[in-house]
Amino acid sequence: MIKKIITIPLISIIALSACGNPDSKKDITSSLSKIDSSSVTLEKESPSSSNIDTSTFKSIFKTSVFLGDSITDGLHDLDVLDQENVVSGIGKSIGDAQKNIEQVANQKPKNIFILLGLCNLSETKESAVTQYSQLIQKIKEKLPDTKINILSITPVTSERTQKEERYKNINDFNEGFKMLAKKEQVNFIDLSPIFKNNTDLHVKDGIHFKPEFYPIWLEYLKNQLK
Image (cartoon, one colour):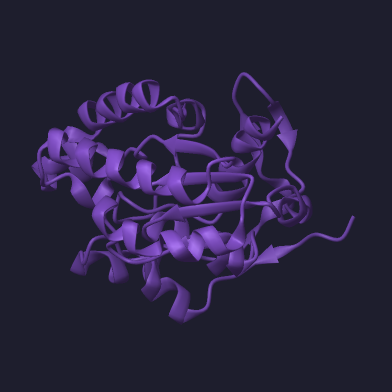
């Protein structure tokens, strides 16, 4: 098998800074390096300890769109997915994402995976849930047959939480998003199992992720398409 090496150009590293955080560019630049993505393993209930073939993801998620912030940016920055399947941006909040609905609708996706909320943590949970509800309603209007998947906010390291109190709200926000998903009859995907057996996925800033996170993430989501 030919091994695929994933590298990140400087412009992509800069694009990964979260919510306007000035520390992110420096931390990510110093932490990311080349990796052999074909050797990444997923240690979770399903699948367990299997090699991940990243070459299949572009075809598997060909009819999906990922809507998110700088965490989601890595999917096309690392060439894991094609750019048209990723609608993301630095510091994108739930409210900001409403401006991207036309762009998403033009793709006519069968599935939409939404990873937002990290940049809303300074607000109240009620405000974030209201904005999410508005976003979902607009997506339903444009794409009534599309399966909507709300992804839980990804965790940050304990060191990062000590630096910024707002990250203590992640679990509370995720509970709010889970309840909203039930109310709106859309799918909620808890990403926390990814991190139970993969404890070293964060880069130095404690928010963003090393390149090996992305194939693990997509392998986890792949089962949601079945």
